Length: 107
Image 1 (cartoon, rainbow, N blue to C red):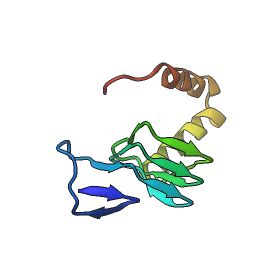
Image 2: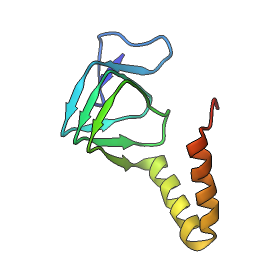
Image 3: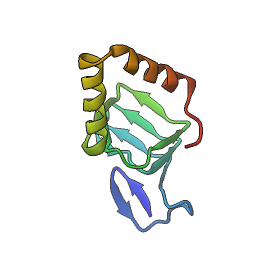
Image 4: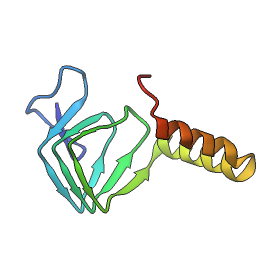
């Protein structure tokens, strides 16, 4: 199924089990990201929501003033990282960010 702004319709989908959104412009919307492939989309002043499911994939997308929000499992991960940074050793989180900057590659 194709997913647009978190709502599915019956206009098709991909063979990989993910939802595809192609050529859509989002403006001042709340957009659910989990498991979605966005291609040639624009996001203008949108709230981009990630819940910790399958990561989204962005191809040739443009972003203007996005706001990322983490919910559910993703929020739990952010809270854990904050607790490590503020209560154990901030170097652990800094090293994690270094790894993110390098790129993780295939899982």
